[in-house]
Image 1 (cartoon, rainbow, N blue to C red):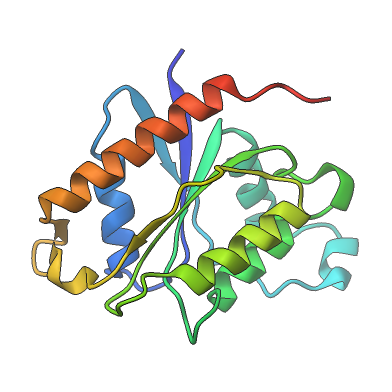
Image 2 (cartoon, one colour):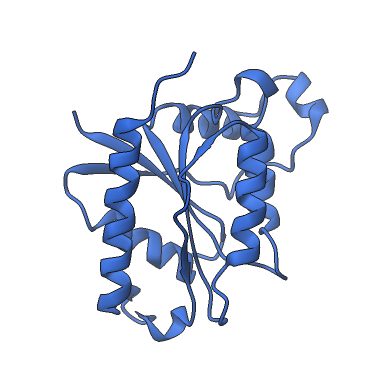
Length: 186
């Protein structure tokens, strides 16, 4: 059975480095179906909106998460932390608390930045948030792509660095294998 992996980019910029990395990931394995799960039209989380009935964009977002076997979040780091738009999306996905669409959902984390530390601080925060939501976050694996601007062709919007491509391919295979071996918990 073909795995369906949702891709969430933590940047709203159309040609962001992280979107290019996520697109490269989606082109690496034809045996996996990738679906983009967009976060750019989500309203700011507001419990009043939720109580009135989730806005259509929120309902679509949650359904998109529910329909996939796992999620890979590819996100930059802003000011040593998680981008606000991604935090907002995770807040919407966390509701209702005990039965959210991310509860027990396998999640992988990847991040790219022009800086030297990759996205280590952001990924720690994302991991903490996901674990509080009881998502299954791929353990012990980190993809921290530093100096990303030297590893892509911005004009062609493609990843060109072969070492990074191999690194991403290994990560993707580990993520898929991990999903296959996760115990189903009720």
